[in-house]
Length: 226
Image (cartoon, one colour):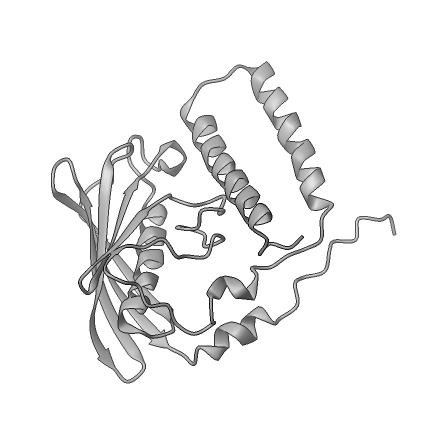
């Protein structure tokens, strides 16, 4: 079986979700030493089992036709599961709900315990990662393949945890291969803009995604005694 098999894909999504929830449970709750040691031992055993498998990189087919995705108006359900911020199988995912509204992309997200930086607030790097990932969905609006060239975040207020947020982004211009984008992150309970972003993306030939995916995975570490 391969990662493209439905059963494997479903199992990877289930495990990715469990890992995300484990991180938040660990970061957000007290536990005694015995429980912490027990959990650590169980997780270390799981790591050994997973490390026994073959090395993998993201399946090239997870990029669809390796060119472009066109997102229709309304909810967006298509994204590759390993995508670090929005992927359903990613251990680091933020579980956003994605929609296209006209020429804009919106991500509804609630940041949780493992995202905390200063007490009660999200780490700024998590906010930056969210913007970078959601800007990538704008490429499915403008019908381009591109990479991030520059990302600038302006933090207007602390980004709250455990409250619904709306990250809304759009393309604002193009000059040659350069695409400019802007976005805002809003706390929905107060309508306060907590962060703003500006991005510069550089368009590329879609075949670059294929070529980068064809590079071999790094070799397994040799753990034998020398």
